[in-house]
Length: 471
Ligand code: NAP
Image (cartoon, rainbow, N blue to C red; front, side):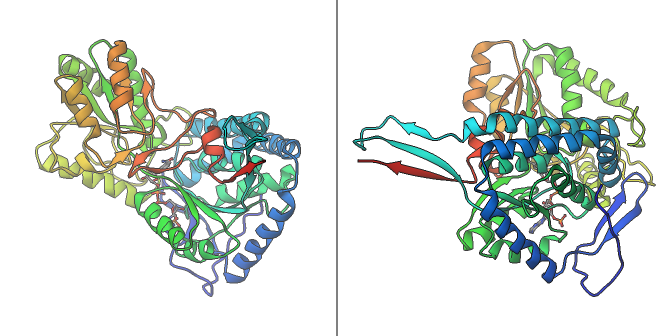
């Protein structure tokens, strides 16, 4: 793996510490010196020169490099997964699955990316000799990424980027620097020319300068609404495109015709996977009142059985939250709801340290004055609501500023169609939980962001969609 240097010089210190801290114990494992101005300049210049030649490579050459990178990551899967667990606390079995998924997405775009980017004839009537669209690379793209799926979020962006012919500058979350360096290292070992994929070890305070630099042409942000707003406004000022994948408070709606057993089992997993820290987690459970008693009871029972503990232990299903601030925030949201009359049908208490654990919790009796009603809850806490029918279910589901995904459980095809038509979300999953698949567009509406990742729609976000007209 990469040489993961650490040092304690204070000369170049910026506000945000870049370090790996094990969330199960709070122990600092490694601290990194942020890149200084000279190093950032060196990397920007390298990105520019790398783009100049990489853009001229063929799709087949790019695909070969992507396959090689998939192989490097596959070979190192155990070490890469363990590093993620140590940096952000996800159960190690889930970390390994994440690595395998990344290997898959690199191979998928190596195989299918070129077809998605092929010239596209237009069957229009404007041009005598015809017209067509070319999808061309645009340059170095800055990727501001979160820690929650520290490999997947990056590779989901990188695989299309490699195929398009753009180059990537990763500004990863400050608590996953080793994973960030592992990705750069894997790209280099796969044979990508230096500069095609680079990690900038910088805090959020350096993003403005990087994005305003003329050599950087666009930015993608996966993270909180605040980060998205900040990066998008900087980009707007210098007329650069952004894609924003932000937070979510996805509804998980269960109607009477649903298979309740599956809806319970999937609903628990959809809430607690990744220790409850997923943008597309099911966060608001909207259950038809005819089945609500049974659903809640079975859900609470299943939540109570989850194995909470050391994320390096293969039996662990729920580990600690990634940061102490995250743990405190979730505890405060739960305490706020309980103090205003909500009921915890499981969990609801605090777990004493060491480590930043939160009890898997399900809350009922929620009202709009409670924080959990409006805010994203980034931990293993499910909010329950009851609906008298589909109208109320849709109304409750849409009563949020977020619009990332949604999951609806019903065997009734008329209901399925209404949900698909009327839910204000970028995605609707029917009788399934939301998962980011290689071939499906991923992204949200409202304050969950804009633009798409993956699929032809995602692949083309950072291309010059060039019209060619011939008379
Ligand atoms: P975050 O605090 O917004 O951090 C995400 C990234 O943005 C980090 O690299 C962070 O850098 C950077 N950042 C934060 N504030 C910034 C600013 N003002 N200017 C420039 N960069 C800034 O989010 P998080 O707590 O890591 O992740 C949780 C959030 O991400 C949740 O809301 C979750 O729903 C969302 N998310 C969305 C998706 C999706 O696909 N829609 C996927 C995963 C997560 P530092 O670490 O250096 O602060």
